[in-house]
Length: 285
Figure 1 (cartoon, rainbow, N blue to C red):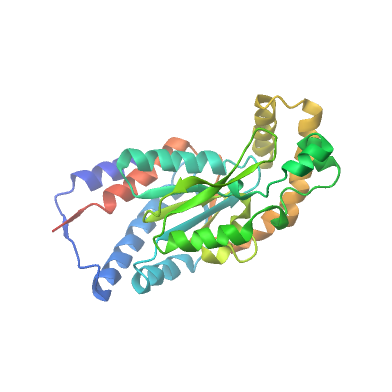
Figure 2: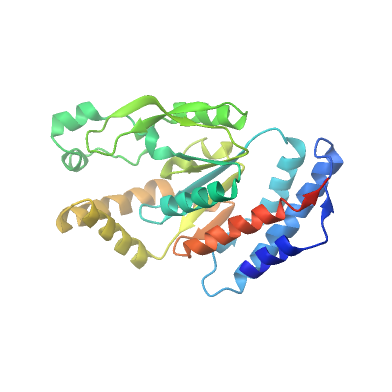
């Protein structure tokens, strides 16, 4: 991938920037981006550990139509996957690389849209006790989906928002209007609820992070140990998330535009973002 990046950066065959305010200019941009995306896929297929596992055959044409017909709307990218699939780590790497490249991308975690369950935590003593008494934390009803839908709609139209913040200190507290999220050209939205109900229909690009079960369980147990969970409790929680994934997350896989390997190299993810940045900044006036 570095070879492709260097080729883009060193190319003397610069393209005169089309007028993207016209339909003809946007059609050229859509065709150009299709070409670059196919170039990425061709390279990826030859790598030892490809990132792209599956691409919906209608995705490229659908996304191209979106760019041509509604250029003012921000591009919402929804990322979902099971617990410990690598989705949060991947999204943070993409955000980090985008910041370094001054690429216009914002990141929003759907985990912050969990309901406030502080009263339930107080009643049962701990989150684990609440879970063991039947609280289904991964169900659609456990999220502020109407607020999420409202906020995503605002972001897509160019309006900044203040997202809630769900505290991860075990109290179950959700602080309303707490995290400033800016409406950049690209908005990366990550969380298991990205494909829930009619939320998925808001995204221009739907990504599912897939991973080998053995690696997933290993990562899950390692993360639990870092959070000072006992091995026994971690196994119990693993059983819960596996059942929940079967009900709420895996069924959304066929709806994805792109299925990505969660165990791919993070540096490779960064290189793809760098290539896209180089390719979209090759125009001259």
